Length: 382
Length: 41
Image (cartoon, rainbow over all chains, first blue to last red; front, side, top):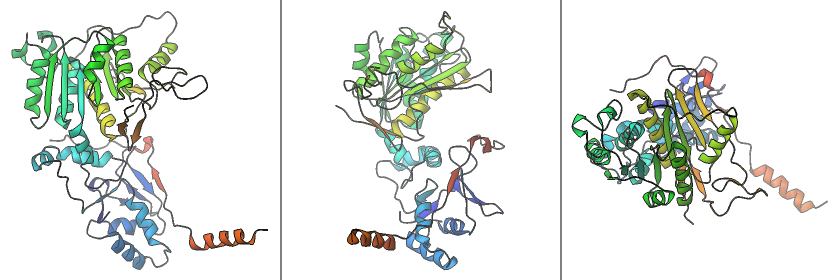
């Protein structure tokens, strides 16, 4: 790091007792630094992007001659998420137009990133190189695909077998009245290309009727957004779970049951898989209680939350920013503000997708090492 | 007693001074406040 600078969004504040608040006031970002002698405060104040590390250390030494090792304080602070390199040059992989288009993304990712970066565009570059399949272009899929296109995922492939119907227009944001009767995939691709012409959007009218067909569909892609509920909500998710594990790619699947909106976030080799979470939830269900997938009730807001949560989970899976909640289902209950869904279950021993053998060793036949390195899903193909 | 081993340890301690560390404590959920936000226009 050549010219350390405290990020604008994380500018520090000092309390009367000397404690420093940095990173604002949001859980997961903000922090407090105990600083009874003012050493950290001086160092942070000097980190304004105009001085090198050596210059900051020297000035800190002059300001606090009692401090035995000012370089230690400076190095620790420079290694936090709150500091960036003012000398970092924007990457050549993004045009000036893209840097303008995604400037708010840049500020957001810079705020929530827990890993110190150089120019802060690393997350956007990862999105630009990402290839995602969106399966299902209904209420959830429309919002998910729109978000992925708007945020700058470089390649998006949209798949759905249906035609646009009038009753879709209460929530399926990619279609207008003129699209009724038109294949959803065709209309969605046309709309998404107007949202972002700097990315590649393709699509096909296609029904996925088997695990094998899903294997073929996701081949060569980096992640799957599962926004389809046929054949039956559970079956298609089991196919996705196994197909993505075999391909070594992460996936997110969302949906709603009336006002209860949930999204699952999964990556091979990291945390429980969908089938283990589903099994854990099944074990919590009162015996004899029928599975309730909900009726046809859905509005723009519930579909929107569902699709946006899927897209948000995928951003984390693709880039590590923010760190994705792998192996969990999260969600909200739109009629109960105090109900936040947060489902976690351990992998089942012997699970063919994510579990361990009876002797505790990892299951080899399906194992794909997926590192969440700074949250990034790096897959290693067999 | 192995004298050489003892001397080696003594040298190591002499050349690696204790670093001054700072403690960074992440805020807890209950400390998050929501009095202001932005609409992003």
